[in-house]
Image 1: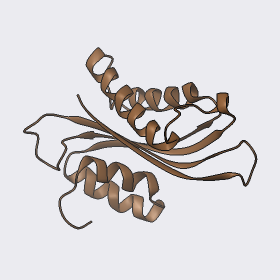
Image 2: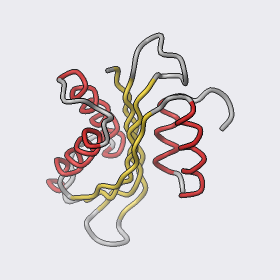
Image 3: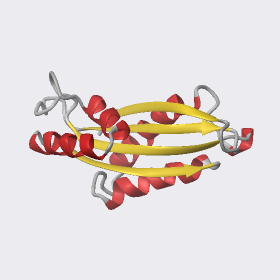
Length: 147
């Protein structure tokens, strides 16, 4: 990875990486102090996707059971979901489904620079479309929020 590592770039690269690329990113990110998790979520129900990402963040210790941290993950996820949905933030109610890989990253905006505190980034990458195989296309969303 060339240049400074930023929280958003790391979240996006983790979400789109294959297993070989992911191993390299994990080594780099761990050295500079980022905490992160990568998972999958898919549904015609937006709430199920939100629940999967938020639950993963809590179970992996990326957010604590405090209002400000739960608020930060919610808004980072909401911003990322806006990117995926491109306007109408809805799935099943408008007859579409999403299959997403997500990454959650916690740490400084720029690697090793904690001068403005900790941040959370959520990246979503996958497909969205009518709930019929072959009717989907790729999507990407990124949200970053201060803790």
